[in-house]
Image (cartoon, rainbow, N blue to C red; front, side):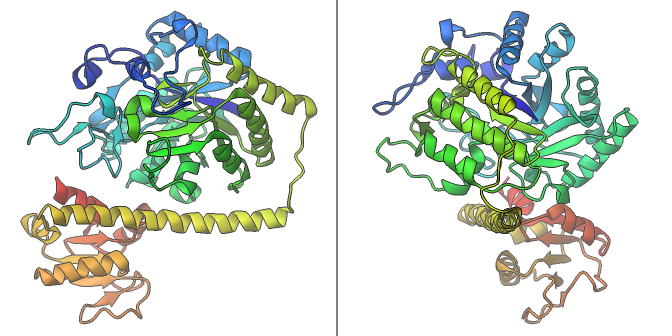
Length: 514
């Protein structure tokens, strides 16, 4: 099992950051500007010996490579920023590493597949990456949609172009593979409506490229293999924050969005059930107040002693789970308080704690005795998987309803949009909570669906025809899918049954909001 640290390539100047956040902006600007927001708040974080490095300098990456080797980090997972039409940003550190063959830094990529947005963008709540609220200009003119870099996925030609860019990295001797397959992480796979088709395309291209395939890992995704992925990984503390600390609470004594004890969240990471073979995740610390001020999530009380003890337990848990990798957040996320690199507060102690945890596990040859029977553990894991799937599903419904209310509050109408764009024969898939609201609105605005599709034909649909996927479905202009899970699989089934354009409800709402 390899320990891989997440790696942020935001420590060098690019023209886009100069334009968006101010001349000379890098992640260091956020880090230097951090303020202590409450008594005992550990800010600002200062690199040891004021080492505010530049990633475009080879000596910086050589220093990082030597450090990771010395303290037991097996590789770096570079965030990969690749957007609509092949637009890239922050790509130079990885491209330089490809040229600097004498720097022994094993690496792989995590595709950060989000749009970059400002806080007022319509995409922010749904899928956008708000890089730094503290440095964005206030307000927006009428022509500014707040989208800095748009993320779209295109079709096969776009997928082929993306693979062609990645191929030279995959062939580099330092690129991390599993069973001969290059490892490629996708940060938000559930954001990709064409996920399975795209990954299938890449698998074929990788075989043509001389590999046995790709090892594609989805971050914080459930039922990964059903979605065409090779595995999933729990990126921490994000997964645990989403499960146990989903509500914002500015009423805490520290007057930030969330304030959580370090040892408490670590214990939840250790205790929670995981899927068999799943890649686990740990973290060194978390505090994004350098980017978000009082709107921050602060995990307070980090220290290397707790980190080392919990990392030992996590490594043992990952070994017992037969996980191929453990992903550690992070090597150098200074703006979010997640870093292993030495700082003025603790020097090299976090690196030393990691190294000691790995050494303890290796020297003891530890085979962890389960605290419960395998049968009980499997039952708990299955129960947890079902509960988490339901949570994910209802979170999706809530997000769509939130966007739908925003649409109504703006005075816009789904039905008007359908008429303007020439959709006269519209069917609706899924006659549940969202489906019933959509049908009611369509009927009230004089564009009733031509028929409904649901796997429970006993539902009362009034005068509207209700069919199942086993029936012969009439042609339509558009089928709107209101079900909030596994859209690619539903889309594929519908393609086999009906001649129509097939779109999810959240896509439609986004289009109307534009």
